[in-house]
Length: 416
Image 1 (cartoon, rainbow, N blue to C red):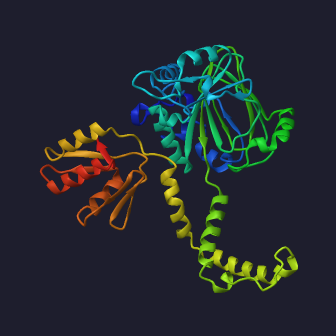
Image 2 (image 1 turned 135 degrees about the vertical axis):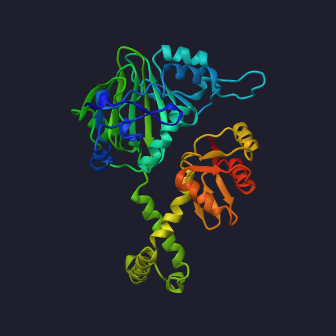
Image 3 (image 1 turned 30 degrees about the vertical axis):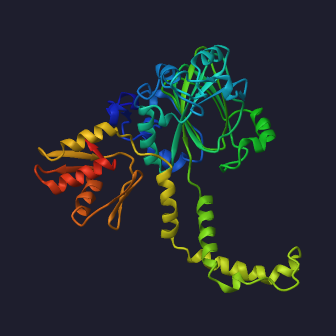
């Protein structure tokens, strides 16, 4: 049986998931091999026929029009590019009119004119404005272990939005509609950091772009292209409007771990009197000969301080960054209130909110949405909730009902 013949399964909000039941299985033919051999290492183009289904459930042209004309979006949720340059926001925004004193809402009339003249529309942070994309992005981020953000690129026929460049994050390109030709070249600077943009190597990028590409293919609806950060790319729409999503993977790097190690070690060295000591009287700090002995002592103490930093300390520093890198799946304030009002009658069930990153720390439940203090009777039910994803509330059990109401108000659970 080919992958294209595997029955489609559905996940939350009826979002299509792959044959393996994961977000990644929708994007690559062999997720295990991808994780083992490809992630962060090489470009991978997977045709639609090797995947369990297309991406029309996530996004489409009607969604583009709704976001631009009906949602009152502001910058920076959209940027516009033409002939390789990004246009100023004033070219496609205007005031919101009476009752909406906002000067930079998207102007659908101007955007219609710009698009007709060959401009590319880039809907940014789509994971915050379009629910199916946001749900899938959350699933993918949880699976990869790295934060994910999403843009949509909508390009008129025969147009090219951006010149050859590289990104400082990995991307999955999901072709939604139309066709787009992609030219991919090997990196001129592999695995660039966030502060190492392609513009710092503009000449090298231009020279590499003139060579034979590693990949020169046309993406069609349902195809997926993965590019590790640093790979050069440029894309041109062909005979019709082309729409694609880019899921940007903002990878955690060893550089971040190195920075944390140094910061913790330096903080610890503040307790070392010899390191705090002044340099000798009359020292010439611009003369390496004058610094030799002091640098040797500092190196020795710094090495020892770094070696003394335990892994748990670094993990504890990373934890709040992970929390801040994404938001949990959405909850509706009115729905939460109604669910709380219904607690306490017949037996009911609540489910753990997705992508909450909930854990028990001492007597507190800590989540992306905040923290909840737990009494001695609540710790065990909450532990079961985190293990199973479900909180069952027995009828007429007021203690459980109070806990359920508190968790609903805190956005930890929602009604099944």
